[in-house]
Amino acid sequence: QVQLVESGGGLVQAGESLRLSCAASGSIFSINAMYWYRQAPGNERELVAGFTSTGSTIYADSVKGRFTISRDNAKNTAYLQMNSLKPEDTAVYYCNAIIRTTARYEYSYWGQGTQVTVSS
Image (cartoon, rainbow, N blue to C red; front, side, top):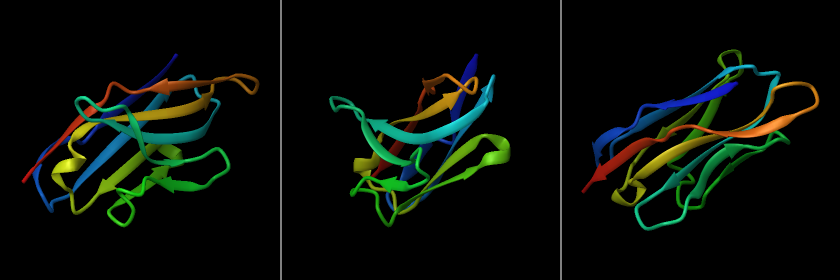
């Protein structure tokens, strides 16, 4: 069993910062990729940032220059530093990870989500 637990969401004013964390635990052989998604009410879930399986870092155009993804491999944790937050960043933020539980099999796991609310 593998669990992803997000933390760090909250209510902030426009222009402020938040740092989200996503900690993976359980039967982990390796983590191939980790992503942050978000979903605002009435909208589809969208990719915000991530580390791909090839080692690349990707960002949505809407967050480039404001958000930074990082990770601590020893802790199986990914972070999303969000600066200069805007009201349109308001959403539930989800962590997604592609994890090998053995050398042979990999699965996609999701966290429970953490609410980020940015007031104007």
